[in-house]
Length: 185
Image 1 (cartoon, rainbow, N blue to C red):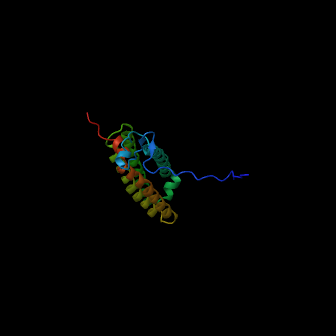
Image 2 (image 1 turned 90 degrees about the vertical axis):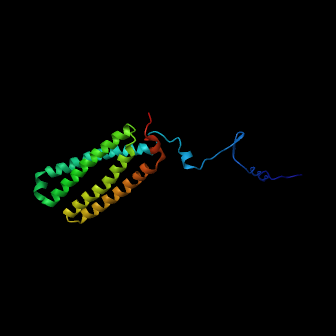
Image 3 (image 1 turned 135 degrees about the vertical axis):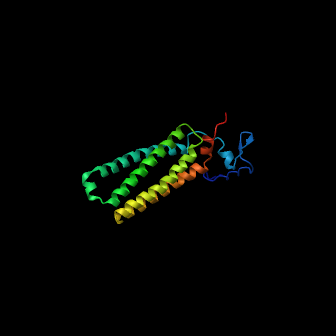
């Protein structure tokens, strides 16, 4: 009697070496970045994140500036603040208003697919980084440091690590270049 182990099988044959095939044609893989991103046009991909970030920044600026303005208008706070704190707070409000206006311009340019959008967007992020750092530093200095100094350092770090990658994306992205390219008549 011939007993054969039903669990013992011959190993599978190795796949033939060579190019991968789909049907009769070998598959072609492109490694050139320009070839991979050639079709990346339109407000898709990370540009959706850019739009969400700009709208969120507008909403945050409205809430933040409203709170700061209410703080300045409050008689209790106004009487407790010295000139340096009030000046730093007013400077912060002025910076917030300027950044709000530039953000709004960038959002409109984004909506109309203007070739100026990438430049204005990068300028907005860069100016925001510089002015928010100065305004936050002034507020921290006027309040005597302490916890406000730590909060200021955290805010400056957040702005740096938030704005930096978005600036790099706007400068280096093929999708941004293709979407906001100058139109020829």
